[in-house]
Figure (cartoon, rainbow, N blue to C red):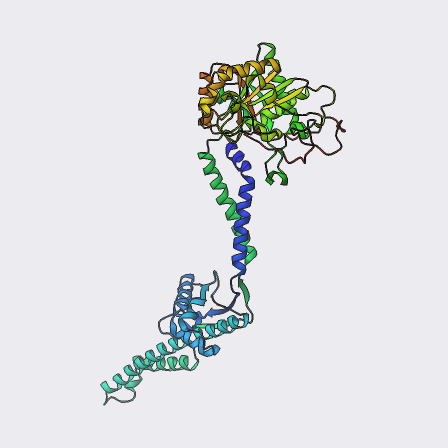
Amino acid sequence: MNENLATLARYKLRILLAALLMAGAAYAAANRQPAQYQATSKLLVNQNTLAALPNIQPTATDPTLLQRQQSTQIALSTIPAVATDALQIAKVGNLTPAELLGDVSLSGEANADLVNVSVTASSASRAAALSRAYAAASSRYQAALLTNQLLRQRAGVQASIIADRNGNPGSPASERGSVSFQQLLSLRDDLTAAINAAPHSSIVVSAARDATQTAPTPTRDGVLAFVLGLLLASGLALVLAARDERVRSATTIGEQLGLTLLARIPAPTRTWRTWRSRAQPMLTMARDPMSLEAEAFKMLQANLELARLHSEEQAVLFTSAIEGEGKSSTLANLALSLAQAGRNVIVVDADLRSPSISRLFGVPDEPGLAELVLGETRSADIASTLRPVSLDTVPGALTMCGTLRILPAGRPAVQPDRLLSSPALERIFASLRIAADWILVDSPPMTRFYDALNVSHLVDGFVAVARVGYVQAPMLEELGRLLDTARVPTLGYVATGVAAQSGAKYGYTHRPGTDGAHPAVDGAGQQAEAPAATLID
């Protein structure tokens, strides 16, 4: 139950959007429908008329008989003859009896001797006129049926009287006054009186005067569609969640990988800038190093430096299971945090398939690692190949400031895996170790390519990056297996895309070195407009 509620809470915006779309569609469709009006007249089922029929003595409290009478009245009212008569009474010529029957509905009222005659039409006056005419036609038709029945009965009695007379032509008149003959005469007189009384098995007791609009009903249809949309979207969300293998919590990621959690990186703030060009995304540690988001990267820095106290980790390779988990942006923010704390940092972009480090820091792509490995740039010129990143414009970097240099990936390589297996790479990393306190290496996703394993013998440890709610459990399992086969230990994992926790604000009310504008970091130390933070892999 709790899991289902959590699923619905996770998809609540999509569920609400689906319900609103269905409600809007239903509302729009209803508004396009032509107006329809319904008028209702009432017929009273007259049980007393049965007294005119011989050998029937009805009781007003007989519910079975009344129910049968209602059903009979309704059945008799749905024949074309009644519809034809109703059209003549209403003087409507542009409607056929079959079309009128399709617009008529008859129903009996519970615990009452009434039959409702409802007619739907395109206008209120037309609906009321047709309802009155149809009720009158139904009553007249049933009255004619009853009269014909009485006439047939009287004709039968009259025939009996004539036969009796013809059978005793010589008998005296007194003999014709026998009891049986007198009964026939009395019955004939009763039937004649019933016929002259114009009996009706139903009477119009309420003729329609106005009509109510029954269509369109956009508000009702919209509300029903909204409720139906909620139910359908919720059911679909539960079905999709049951088939979804994405890992939804940082704790589950740790259990899958069997690693220590180094930091939880919150999901980037979503603003209109997110949809702008990502040509030079802004890093959190450059945009606002005093923010709560930046504290996550400082936590990652602190945990890595604590791990370094027990070993000599200097070169750390960042990898992930698949693309899109924020591996590169996590590495870049960590590099800025280390440099702001006074460390000498070199970032190596060993992702020769889809490099992004140069774009994150706004430095030229070439020459870079590819040119160094191929020998197009001499090893002695490694220092000149490194691109320095100025920290002067970074808010918050006031007193303790180290260095940050970038070794970009260089030009696109035809066979990146062969390039990263070159012995020249060992000499390059040996030179870099002399020039830096920390070497942070970016690499392609490990389950997609084995480039990270090619470079593993050149680094001191791995850091796995996994995005909550994005990476799937089978991919994490494969990543853990590959990390176990590496030549170096894995220091821990970083969970990215974690939902921000609500809580009271704590920290500076004024941030030193800021005036409300947060300049970006670029290779020339120039300020640039700060777009929204993004996850780059």
